[in-house]
Length: 228
Image (cartoon, rainbow, N blue to C red; front, side):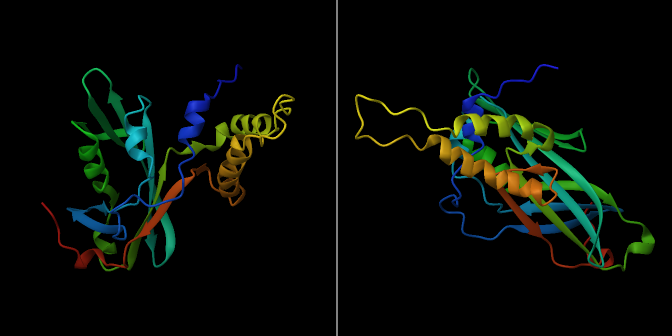
């Protein structure tokens, strides 16, 4: 099977500096929402990569993975996978934003600027993720959400390992300019991807350089206000 080439541009987009977007001072919040017997979440104020504004208009599809887990008395239970894709239309100068839960599309919209995209991502409503049986209404539950920007699936890690290994070798010195230092691009790439490798070593099936985990307070479904 042919191995797909990994573009340097795409790999660079996987490596934002670990910094907070200016103005993002509030901690992220994960709030449970009950509609009928369906439990969903509202996710507000997640930290975003400082390169996000540039990434959104790069012409590449930007991907965000959110893994939401339901905890019952502190024990991990069912998990739902939320995939968000944002793609910039260079001709229309609009953004196509799609949200899928376990591969089933649940929302789609067109945004007319970077600020609108960030506003949507900063206030995500994800209804109907879990079914709550009437007998579970008084159980002590909680929710966690792991948010990964530009996630890398485990199946692609060997390709990335090879790319890093090939590019971390220092180039031969320039005999005409022995006083200049060697470029640090390769070693920087190796350090960045070591962060991803460490996540896989800890047992993760999906990893990213930029990620955040948010947890809700403990709650009982019976105490939640049911939304129409």
